[in-house]
Amino acid sequence: QVELSISGMTCSMCSQAVTNALSAISGVQNANVSFTTDSAVVQYYDTVNLDTIRDAIEAVGYDVSDVRVMDNENNNLEENWQRFRQRQTDKVGQRRRAFVWALVMTLPILTITMILPYIVPHLFNDRHITVFHKTFAIEALVLWSLATPVQFFSGWEFYKMAWYGFWSGRAGMDLLVALGTTASYLYALWGGVYKNDAHTAHFFETSAVLLSFVLAGKWMQAAAVRRTSEALTQLMELQSRTAVRIAPSNVNPLVEAYQEEVVDTEQILVGDVVKVIRGASIPADGRVRYGEISVDESMVTGES
Image 1: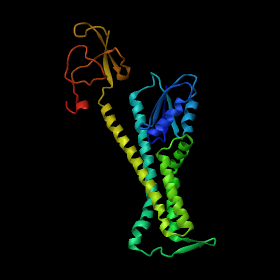
Image 2: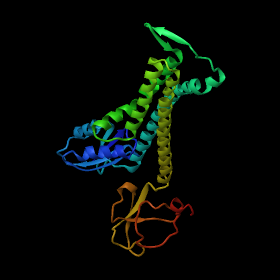
Image 3: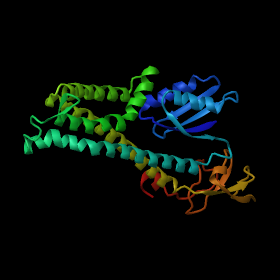
Image 4: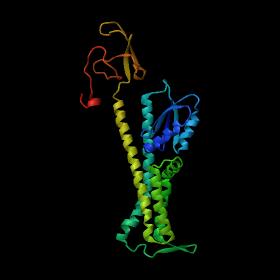
C-alpha cells in the first residue's frame, strides 16, 4: 500500500480521472483518491512498479510530489495529518499568489475600461501608433499588454489541465474556462488590435476578469479546506496519546489480579482491554466491559 501526494486536482472529476488511470493498471487492487486532501492511497500487488503508478497519474496531467510506502510501522495518524496540513498550507499559498498576480494586471484593465471613460472620456480617443507600417490604437495595445500575462501566465494551469482533459476524453471546468477566456481574448486581439476597434478591445477585460474570479474561487476553496483541517486538528489534540492496557485481557479487573502497561494509542489493537480512570480521556473507540464512570462528551455534543 502506498500514499501519494498529488497536486493539480480541483474537483471530483479530477479525482475520478486519477482513479480511472490507476484502476487501469494491471495489478492495482484498489485506489482511493481524494481531491480534498490532494492524496491517493493505492493498494497493489508486488508485480506493480511504483514508477508505473507515478507515470499513470502524470499521464493524465497531475503531478506526484511525494510517494510514501505504508506499513504497520509507518502509519502514524498524527504524522499523516501534519503532512496533510502542510500540503494544504502550500496549496493556499500557491492559490493566493496566482490570484494576486492576476489581480495586479486586471485592476488596471478595469480602470481603463470602466473608470477612466467617466473621468477622462477622451484620454485614448483617436490616439494611434504606427509600427512597421501598421497603425494600432494605443488603448488596444495597452489592454493587450495587460491581459496577455493574465491569460497565459496566471491561466497556464487551466490550459494545461484542459489539454490533458481533452486528450483523455473528459471535459471539466478547466476546459470550459480555457475555451471561454481564449475566445474572448482572441476576439479582442483580432478586433481591437488588428482591426483598431477600441470597443472590441474591451473584451480583454472579459477574459482577465473571468480568470481572476475563478482563481479567487480556487483560493477561497483551498483556504476553507485548510480551516476545516485546523478545526479537525484541534479535535485530534483532545485525544489521549497514551493508554493503559491491562493483561491478561480475559480477566475481570474489578475482582481479579492484572498487570498494567502504558502504550501509545496507535498500539491499541482489537480485543485489547484498556483502563480509563476518572478525568482521563478515552484513548480509542471501544465498548464498556467493566465498571462505570462519567465521561466528558463535549468533543461530540458541545456539552460536558
